[in-house]
Picture 1 (cartoon, rainbow, N blue to C red):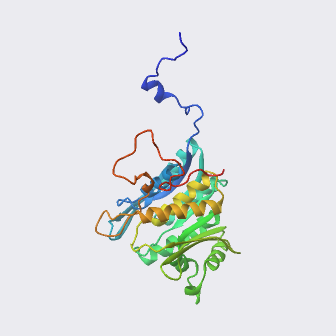
Picture 2 (cartoon, rainbow, N blue to C red):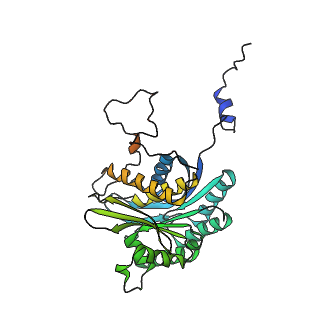
Picture 3 (cartoon, rainbow, N blue to C red):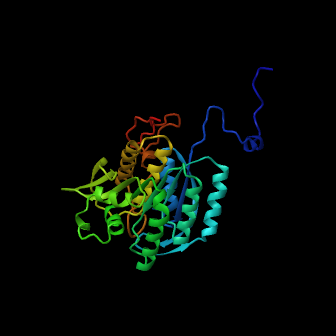
Length: 314
């Protein structure tokens, strides 16, 4: 015999639980989030963003948005016990490295997520607070209260738009409109949050600011040209990319810069699939500059500026 092994049957390959030699499994991220039928945010947005940075999504369904590209008319929540059971089963089976929390739909679901986080205290929790202005005010208040009391004490990084965070974290402040990112970070720190990633900060001219802040100082500030479009799914995209990069070993400042640059490119390549708001193109890096696709063996390298840089320093 020559030392060549007989080819495996498909059954043999499928039944082998071990990864191929020298091939480590992708970083696994649990995301608690809703299904979004527009494909702009929610778990579909998380899957595309996490896959783009080299991580694997473990989706825990918390409910479904009732929306199209023009408006959100409601949300159909999933029972909190079903949410908890999804998370328990997957975490006992796969090596989870980080947790992302999007919109989970109800105070009871928030409690289930918080309970899961307390069972895995070594996992970093990245919490994204979306704009909930489509919801009834009493539902917004109840949801905000649950997140504030149960989830924020376990949150490493809170992500949100400047306007959303100001209305939530500084509701009684007479100077709310003049609060800067550090003021927001101080308010979040009182609730147990270590770091805040604030987007949509006003800047002179046609630019928009984003800042990673602690209660003491601004750690990272990134500015980009304002894109004249109204997007859905930007916050889920950013928070998912940040979570994946942290799980892959990037430090917080490095992960923030790369996640913001990834979001900027996704927005710049955004598209309008319907009659309403635009959607980030999270797979912009897979596009080619010419109509003809490159040969199969000519995969772009990390130096190709059309792709995100995943050569992270772990």
